[in-house]
Image 1 (cartoon, rainbow, N blue to C red):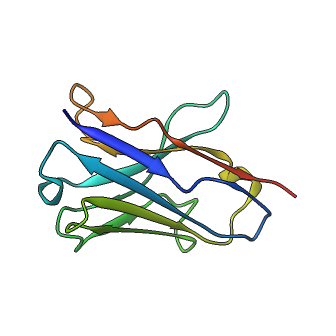
Image 2 (image 1 turned 30 degrees about the horizontal axis):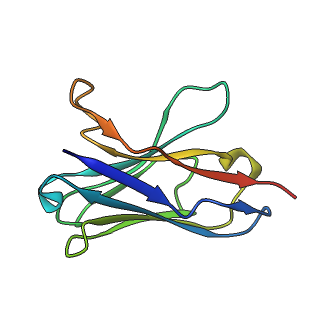
Image 3 (image 1 turned 120 degrees about the horizontal axis):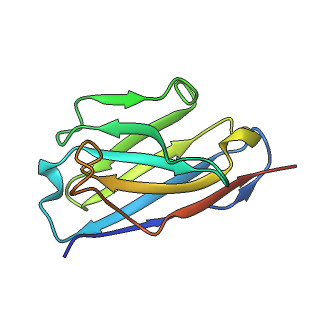
Amino acid sequence: EVQLVESGGDLVQPGGSLRLSCATSGFTFSQYAMTWARQAPGKELEWVSAIDGGAKSTYYAGSVKGRFTISRDNAKNTLYLQLNNLKTEDTAMYYCVKDWNNPSSRVRGQGTQVTVSS
């Protein structure tokens, strides 16, 4: 069974930083591209960033490029998202997602809440 468990969310002030983690199990992690997505209250799920299985290519939404960094440790089966220079509009539930491009097999974790507020 595929399991994705996110952690690291918190309440931070604008300009602050957080590091999100996603511990995975139940599949061969290194063989899959992985995605971070987020959902703000009343809004649809938004793609944020992705990384290929070998961690050679990374991709970012325009709204987070230059502020967020995606990475992975295939030895630990763990995905990360470093969030810097946080803005109030970054407030959302953040999800780790497997198979983002295949909605019929897409799997996401329970999410971790990031709240940016002064």
